[in-house]
Image (tube, rainbow, N blue to C red):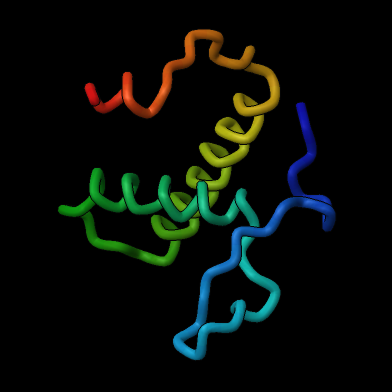
Length: 90
């Protein structure tokens, strides 16, 4: 398993309203976890969000993010490609 907590991890910057990068930026792992967290919160939308549930969902979100990052490295690249024209039927 790949360790995604290293400082050399790629950054996915979230822009501030001033147009500059947010302090330190978010890692790709953080962005994936945010996406997973949104889906998890939707699944549990009828639950009472206690501190322990939020902590559990946060841990799950990062586990999902780690799996997504692992898949980016270990899955073979998709071989069938097409042009923009083919993709949009132009």
